Length: 336
Ligand SMILES: Nc1ncnc2c1ncn2[C@@H]1O[C@H](COP(=O)(O)OP(=O)(O)OP(=O)(O)O)[C@@H](O)[C@H]1O
Ligand SMILES: [Mg+2]
Image 1: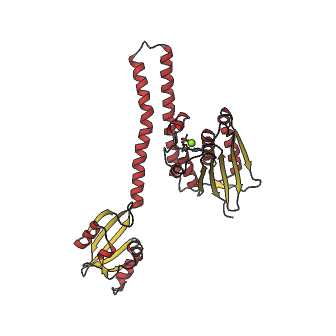
Image 2: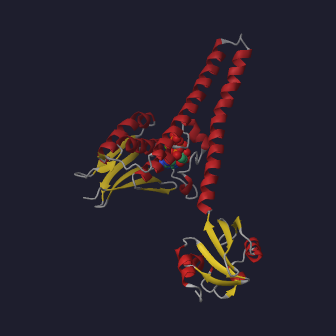
Image 3: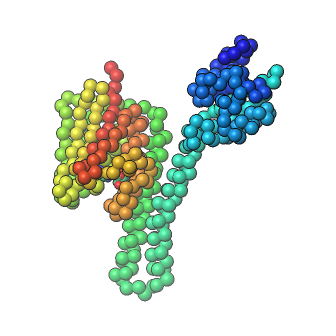
C-alpha cells in the first residue's frame, strides 16, 4: 500500500472481502483479498488494470455511492456484490463481496422445488387419469376397475415414498449441527442392514456377505440414521449391482486407526464416470426408468450424503463400468 493515513490502512486490512481505495482513475490501496482477486500489481496504477469488468468499471469511475451485483470477475460462474462508497478527499471505497455461494444455494433451491414438483406431478397425473375414467364409466368390467384401482394405489404409494424421503431429508438437514451422541457399532449396523436387504437380494438370486473386523471401536453416531444409510447403500447394490452373473454384495467394516470404514461393494454394471459426481443430487438417477420401476425416488444417496455430513464423515463412490461399484463411508473415531 502507498502513503495513506494510518487508520485507513488498518481499516482496509480489517475488511474481509476484496477492498480498494480509488481516487479519480487511480487505485490508491488494496487489501490482501483484493490482491488475491485482482492481481498483485494494481496499486498506484490506473484502476482499469485492477477492474476490467465494464459495468463495475463504469460504476467506479462514476464515483457515486452504489450497490450492485456483477459477474465476470475472476471466472464466469461467480457473482459479486459491488459496493461503492465515497469517503473524504475524493477517495472511493470499493468492495467486492463474493456472492457465488449464495447464488448457487438459491439456484439449488429453485431447481429442487422444480424437480420435486415434477416428481410428484407425474404420479398425480396418472392417479387423476385413472380416477376420472373410473368416475365417468360406472359400468367398467370388474377386471379393469381392479387394474385401475391397483395403478392408483401404486402411484399413491410412490408419492408417499417421495414425501417420506423428503421429510427424512429435511429432518437430517435440520439436525446438521447437532452432534450425534450415541455410541454405535458399525459392525452391528452392517449386520442388521444385511438382514434387512436379504429378502430383496434373495428375490434376485443374490447373496449379501458381511465381514467385520474384530474389536473395532464404536463411533459417535446416530444409530437410526446410520442404519438408514447402510440400508440405502445395500438396496442400491442389490437393485443396480446384483443379479445374473453378479451374485454377491459385500459389506465390509474395518478401521484404519483414525476412521472406521463401511464399504458396500457390488459386482454389477457399475456407473459411468460422468454420472458419479452427480449421484448425491436429489432426484438424480442414471437410468430414471429403471430406478422408477424398482420403486426408486432418486433421493437415497442424497440422504446418505447428509447423514455422512452430519457425522463429519466422508463419502466416496468408486465405480468401474462393467466391474461394479464400491461405496465407502468413513466415520471418524471419537478422540480420547
Ligand atoms: N451400486 C450401484 N450400481 C449402479 N448404479 C447405482 C448404484 N447405486 C446407485 N446407482 C445409481 O444412482 C442413482 C441414484 O441412487 P439413489 O440411491 O440416490 O436413488 P434411487 O436408488 O434411484 O432411489 P431411492 O434410493 O430413493 O430408492 C440410481 O438411480 C442408480 O442409477
Ligand atoms: Mg437408492
